[in-house]
Length: 372
Ligand SMILES: NC(=O)c1ccc[n+]([C@@H]2O[C@H](COP(=O)([O-])OP(=O)(O)OC[C@H]3O[C@@H](n4cnc5c(N)ncnc54)[C@H](OP(=O)(O)O)[C@@H]3O)[C@@H](O)[C@H]2O)c1
Image 1 (cartoon, rainbow, N blue to C red):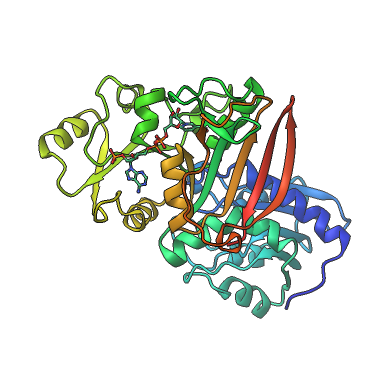
Image 2 (cartoon, rainbow, N blue to C red; image 1 turned 180 degrees about the vertical axis):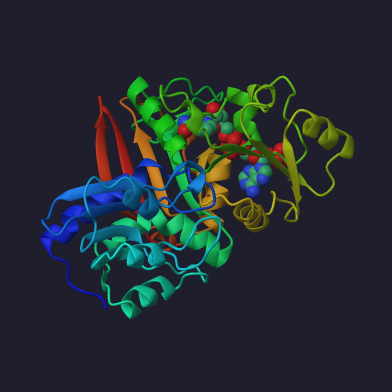
């Protein structure tokens, strides 16, 4: 049954959500879940996030590392506990075995393998279950996983780094450095919270980026790098190819791409996937996203350039836009962050809800939810 949560429930759930955020982008195919255990005496006796690569589940870790007796405790968990055995034992059974008296769940798991069965098992075993506490916030964390298991596609987030007047590069394509160090570091943190990061081939040709996470302490949390490159123009001496042994790399190309080039790239540790090409246009984004979903990636970060961003914004449901905007003005001859959307009417365009704004030393990161 859905209840109106009290402040205490919200406080503990917020802690669990922060724990879930910690390992986002680093739990493989599994969702990143947070779990907090509160004793009968109202003391936090354990807290955990899903393990790296998705195992063990947060509930199991929290139970095992509890510093006091958990019988009769309340468990706060950001996603419905599972009740099926996969690589991990069923968490709902574990909670019952440990004689937990109440489980507070932020969001129900629509994964067909769970879909209310965890909640039912708990209730049938006389555990009090309350759901829906801070559900909207939980959906920002669980949404990628839930979207992939339901629709086969990851959540799509876009990152833009622009001048104050919305330009991403000078007329000749130079974009180093529009934003400041702090923004760029934050951009690296964003990479670490996504399973994969995607750019168009022109960005590779003009910037020769590494697209990894270089923040101290998070170097082992780089996402898979994905490049859209219809005719395999990527140079073998680009940083992406030269570091493909170290960081997972996928290139999407078209069905007619040269077999010889593909073989060569595969020898250099690049995975090459072929998809159809829309007539007189670009690679088929729908097919690309289904392949990305098949690879088990829950959250995809689109990093540009503006041709790619425009393609995704106009053809797919984008979840969030992380927009870094700097203290520089580039002017009308600079490259726009977003290309032509060919709107006939202002109402037709994407509609944004500002959910967070962070001051990064006179640069600003605005996080928008894309409403349509
Ligand atoms: N400030 C920032 O945040 C930022 C971030 C990234 C880039 N940039 C700047 O942006 C510039 C590059 O942007 P860009 O717009 O020229 O190119 P881009 O978006 O990096 O790449 C576009 C290219 O990707 C390929 N592609 C394949 N499938 C596609 C699809 N479905 N949709 C769109 N493109 C597809 C196409 O080339 P093929 O037909 O050859 O496959 C297309 O021309 C550079 O100057 C770079 O410095 C700025």
